[in-house]
Amino acid sequence: MKKRVGLKLFLALIVLTAMGAGILPAAFAASQKIINVNAEIPANSPQISVTILKFTDGNPDDNPWTNSQEVDSMDFGQFTYLLADNSNAGIFFSPIGFCAVIFAESFGKPYDIMSSCQGISNGGYSLKPGSFGLTPVYSESDKFIFPGGEKFNGTFPGNGANLSPAGPAVGDRLIYTSENGVATPRILQAYYGFPPFKAGGALPFPDYTPIELTQPPGQYSGTVTLTISLK
Image 1 (tube, rainbow, N blue to C red):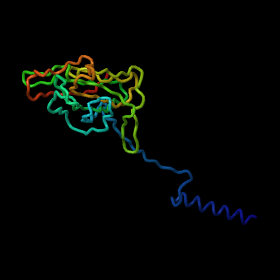
Image 2 (tube, rainbow, N blue to C red; image 1 turned 90 degrees about the vertical axis):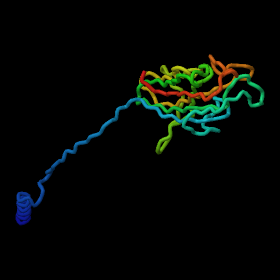
Image 3 (cartoon, rainbow, N blue to C red; image 1 turned 60 degrees about the vertical axis):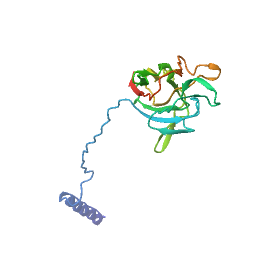
Image 4 (cartoon, rainbow, N blue to C red; image 1 turned 45 degrees about the vertical axis):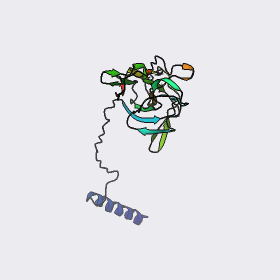
């Protein structure tokens, strides 16, 4: 028994001696390195991106993603007075229409989306403001596509969100106002066109003014500005 105790004591002295000499680490000894971490959130002002789709089906209620082509501008071409059945409409109009698909991101802040147009003119001549129409549309099936997934527009939000009715595109027109509080990113459709009267003489949109056949000829042009701003 004494030999075993002496052996244990001898081994313990060897370990302590090694630790004192720095050969073995002391029990629970630790060191640390503090690493600084830096990151920056960019200025999160509201942003929009716009895809312009051209279609010729004449019906702004149709799905803009079908029977359409992506373009960079809205060129309505030469106006006509003949309807699809070759009857005389009695006015000038364009069978071509465009849909500006607006992808809006405000980083949670309530926002408005506006469309502004100062008119369509040719020198001293201008098309009647009520001839150029704007029809805002909200589609639940529109979707954001990103790497690894997609997110549908979904149900129209409540809490103060509102989509403006159809009307003339000339002037400053509100397309959409988001919900109050924490606002969500949304996709809006804005249809632009120079339509004729509907079947039976119904107006294509409120405050519509047709382009008379006496309108001076020439190349008419203008601009549409789409803007997102915080409420």
